[in-house]
Image (tube, rainbow, N blue to C red):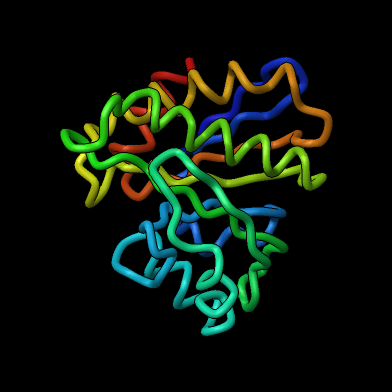
Length: 175
């Protein structure tokens, strides 16, 4: 199952899969920790697939604050770039919805500025950071839609979701 909607000339897609295995995307987004180091979840999967060069390149860029995004090369990943975002910890980093929206907005603005045509996101903050999935996806999709009119380069945005139920939740929002 997957879903695709075109919105003002930009394709918004949703698939079930592994964010570290999106070879047709120019950039992928890492749901990073503040130190931009390997960890568990999305960050761990991306760092393992990218190899040790990613951690070396990230070190001088850290720490980042909730809502911030930074860009690196993708090293051993099949993509050209990794955009690292620090999402809010639900219940701790306030206001969560604004900080989460900043993650998506800053990643998209950085991608567009760098001439990136396609970008894949995980469900930022919806894992270990405890953000309720449906709320996190609503904030992400709303921010994506609000950002599209300013794009010069981004033509494809993909949400890569971990489970079938996560994917179904996003497809419902997309419709």
